[in-house]
Length: 274
Image 1: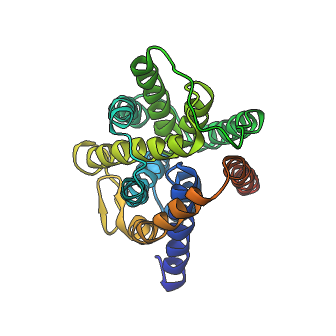
Image 2: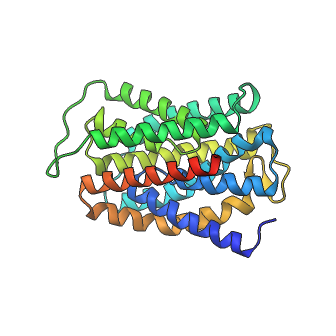
């Protein structure tokens, strides 16, 4: 069972994930996955539903962090509804399709999950290090067929979210900045908005429509409220502070923080697996 110390740890996870969500536009999933995995194991989640449950609970927490951060971005007049809607709906479709596939068709076990998660983080860290944005970059280059590109980025991010539980922001950020030449602060806002929309719709699916269900106390569908609710509540509190700091930092400073955090998560995942 989860005791008071565990609840405090989950609250701290929510603060860290929410802050990083607002700061980096990644939804906080790279923090949530580690702790959700640990506590689902502690509560005795079945191996059959372990990976789908980790991903579902991470997405549930990501919604709250993303919503709080997106509201702050809107108040800061850094909100972009068209790319959010196009990318968000595409990513939602892909995330739900692959979430269902993982639960019912694919042999996607804990080892596969850890391996793909670490490879994804390494790829993103290298990509972000190679692309250095000029400090005075205020203008974006005009890009043709942006709607098609937003659809493609949405499908890719939703697919990766379904397989990793990290919300897709960690792949959207470099794609927006490298492929569409967005400045990093606009990319942060769009990524956060897409994550919020996708996480909301996939959470409804995992709580109501997904035929799989956890056999754990205080669970709705694949969502364990005793794990996810403390994280979600405190992520709402912390996300606006991350958004405020991001608006004050230089773009390359945000990139460095992004990469350092990814490396820390990789070390934690590798040490926990071996």
